[in-house]
Image (cartoon, rainbow, N blue to C red; front, side, top):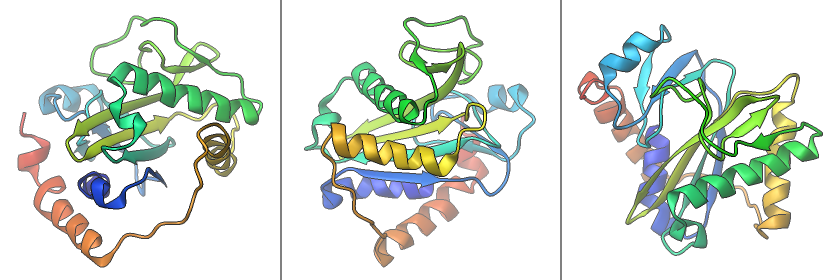
Length: 209
């Protein structure tokens, strides 16, 4: 979470989109910035609970595939309304799974769900596999840029590395993105440590609502 927030702050300096794949070192659950801690603490036994900088609902992180996207203010994606951004994201992931011969579809309309819990039901334009929601994402847009944090509940025996490559390939071909390795600067890493220590590891932030 600290790295994603630091990347959002740095988006104007980066000047181009950034895609990050990452994994969790232990089971955990994250929840939306505006959610009430007391609610999510009752909904799941997973610990630790981590408040995201983005919105959305409660997401379990045990075997999921997680990623984040950052767009600077001048990028065309930044200008999209939230719903259009969400749809474009999951159309991208739909194409990536299609390359892996995994059949998915976009939810045409909201399904019944328990409010605040991301993978209990599907919203419009969520990604479905065999009728089950397998992808969700949350967004945060500021004057500095757009941050998207997403989670995939992998279907069947789908391979994580193959999925990551398919995501990159679709973007390269459909969006004409030229991917290049990127490494954070010492200054950005120092900001990450500051956010991790002074914000994301503090109960005052996690339990503030």
